[in-house]
Image 1 (tube, rainbow, N blue to C red):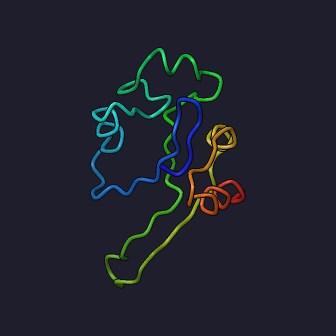
Image 2 (cartoon, one colour):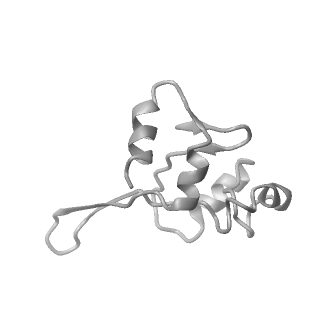
Image 3 (cartoon, rainbow, N blue to C red):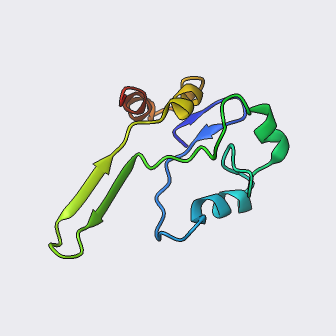
Length: 108
């Protein structure tokens, strides 16, 4: 976890494959569903945050892969979208994660 709110957490996840719904399924199995996820989430929790989460709050902030032809490392970054940014601003960074959370907030 990078930051925590009253009953939410900001997680940095590194999936090993590109399997459909991999992150959503695994988090739901660990009783840590993605906020706004109507397929695997908790309906009451989603309703409580309906004003902030109109979709599953997942975001690929950084992607990196080896180009299949050239072997060159391709890296891409995308700033947090407004809805996720609003929620993260309500959270408290965990000790040692302040700089990373601050960089996410300033990536816009």
